[in-house]
Image (cartoon, rainbow, N blue to C red; front, side):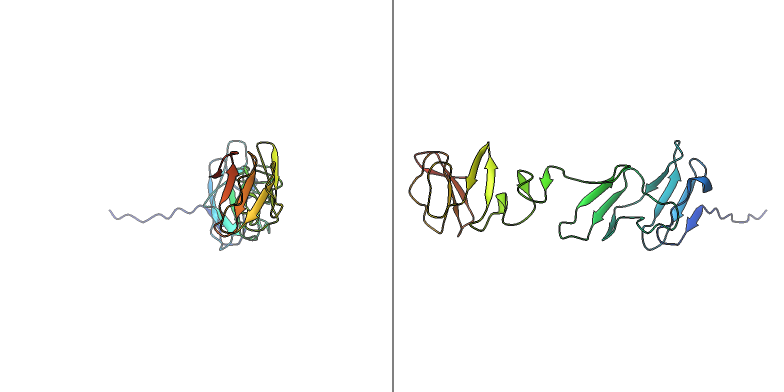
Length: 185
């Protein structure tokens, strides 16, 4: 007895951003999108929602933004936004894209950790400000009194009042005064 090979094919499309419509697949049925943009393996879940199984989409625009098939995205789908130098990782929540790493912010004015240069933790100019433990520090060149930071190059200035701060522009180190000595922070 000879056997004849059987080829099983799932629903598939080679068109870019061609996600299956919920009415075209049955619950648990697989559909494959193999187009060069936004490819993935799709299935219909028990709530009749189309879910995507794939790696993270990398590009200047969100996946499925130029939908040919079913519009929208799947909950949990990820996208690395290459349209900015920050390359944020985003997750689809069902209502919109949520930036991953909410503890980080785009500027020092909105969080304690900043992603942009010349701000709180990457300050390398004389024009920055940070907030630490509720006390404001600001740059005032040549001054080191109270809770005022000073910038200098090379040698530390005279020890300031406890809580004073100083930034060495040559080394990039930040110092805090304990009232008796400068402490590297």
